[in-house]
Image 1 (spheres, rainbow, N blue to C red):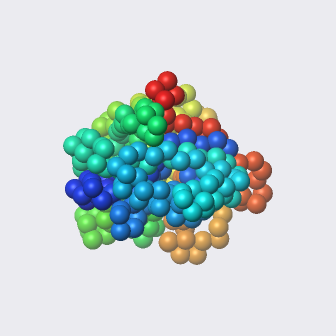
Image 2: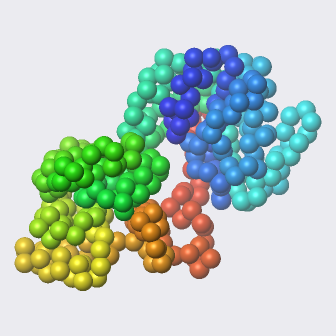
Image 3: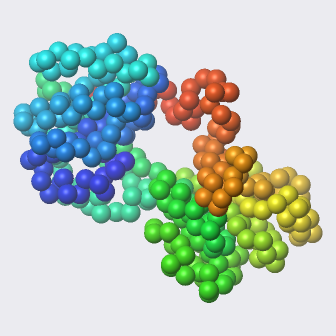
Length: 344
């Protein structure tokens, strides 16, 4: 429920007519991770989804039954199909895994707590623990945790950074754009949901980095301009930052720079003159982006966003899935549960 709780605020004002289904455990391959949720109303309005379409109809029908009965339901779905409802329908997960879903009519929920969480910024860390009375008297404890969103800091406002910032916002990241030029650093030139800062990029970014104390946060700092006096100062700042959760190789801070190979070489030489050794300079990913043959700012932003996602989700390789082996969602746990088994 915590994954899209902000979308359920109106549902919390009409609890008699809504239920929320949450994936609480998975085994093997699954279309979505634990914590993924979907709200269903008595008149079959649906918010969100749990899979690529193989189980939504069954879960929606079960949710309507749960609303009518006024009680929590716990359903299981697997690769062979699970009998469902009086009609005896079967739901087969084509991904081959097994999923458990808890469906909670909102009349049984702590609505005050849910409303408070729903009004929070969904990009901030949060926890939600629900004590539920299931079928046949079983007691369930569902404990969810939402990590703070990744942060993307871009130095330089122009078409490329506009599209990259937009993709970051759409992915649920916290995005900050910095520029020293008043004519460029205007609200009209940045996407909705992006924080805009006017000032010397290195100074502003230093201030932004000092404000983040979440040890679980992942940050990407990307130079999007071609001004050596500004670019090198930003990269120097990023390399010297020892943020919360950082380790020896700076795994929680990605540093990238857009531009040509000659620009990358000039920046590297300047960083060497500032005293950064080879291992530190190797952390700067430049030119930024995957080789997609991008021809427009939007296509270039896709290539850069793809590399950022792969870096965040290490050990993802960024290679085409057809050339990879093993699970597609390599960073997702193959067995995971939100249930406190001691309470079941």
